[in-house]
Image (cartoon, rainbow, N blue to C red; front, top):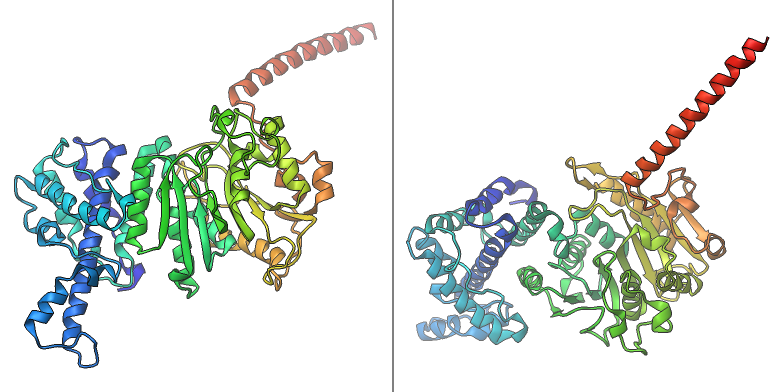
Length: 525
């Protein structure tokens, strides 16, 4: 069945709404996503089990045999499954077992017991997967009927990986839920979710065909999943990429690990604060794709070592407790390989901030040819924040010595995409294919050896570093591309209205004075 033929959004949200009343919306994901993950592991086991059974009857297969004891031994050998990147799932931990018992009063106990069995398998394989499936159903307020309803709905054939082998169906279900739960959760979802159209834009511009991919603020792993999609769409091989990440929230890390296990990817994702406790200190990545939290204050730069190798200069001059934005930049740069490129979503304020600890870093990056491209994004792209955003591209292949890209030293490409995107709802704007392709084409045309590029008034400009230096190192694309749009000055709307009212009243007074003076002049005639 083709991917486009599978429409499941309504049914999936109906399943989530089975939880209504017993579970708050921002906790839906903690119950639904582990079940989707468990269903994936169970179906993967069944698929491999069936493949082995079929191989017994194929004379050309190394598994060909008529010996029943040998068949039984192979089917019960856990290493046979591990070698195929899955697990030997016992009956009591299978989705079939849950389905058969969905109407039982003790279904919550049955699920938690199944979680225990699978958790033991996960931990045995990798200690970092510990506590991925905690016992959460028995102690929940959910009724047995609600839980059974979810199991029955997720058991529909259209949600089966076995029935739809080419569609990444369970991965897509997981992805759908993460997006919908982010919409339900609102501002609290920023720690685990970046809207899909932004992630796709980052990946399409970066082109991570092969190599090491790193996200030190990885949330639920959306950047990694989109990288995998990009590779598949371009007939690449997922075994050509290695994934590294770090996430500071344990619950979000669980979402990420399940997300990656669903896709059978090779990964090393660790728990910790990337700014103060870098868990991958020696990693040099070919691609960094990240949406770190914006404008984090009071992050304690004083806790950094004075000689932290990530810093471009003295700690007091290259950090500020008011915002971690440029500590993220220095962290990303330190993790790039000799030809690596980073794409980072940032708050618009990072393009112009005059705080010493931020401007010093920005000036250093411009003067030392680190910045490749800046893209200004439109508003309402994020469910989780109203702060306007942009994308910074930092690159170590700007000299063109990697054979794929031309020499861009001495230039920065500015793209103003602030007028792009379509409103998907009253609150959310999305990039469609045409928008992503337009932005990507401009960047690749300017960057790639075989590319063709011309400045477009109001949209893109390849500016010389001297121009940026003359503009006091401001990186707002509107300054360079020729747009007349007024840049966001950061002054709250209420303050602007107060000032405007004051100015208006003052002008009314002057108008009245002028009117009296004109009348007086007429009387003299």
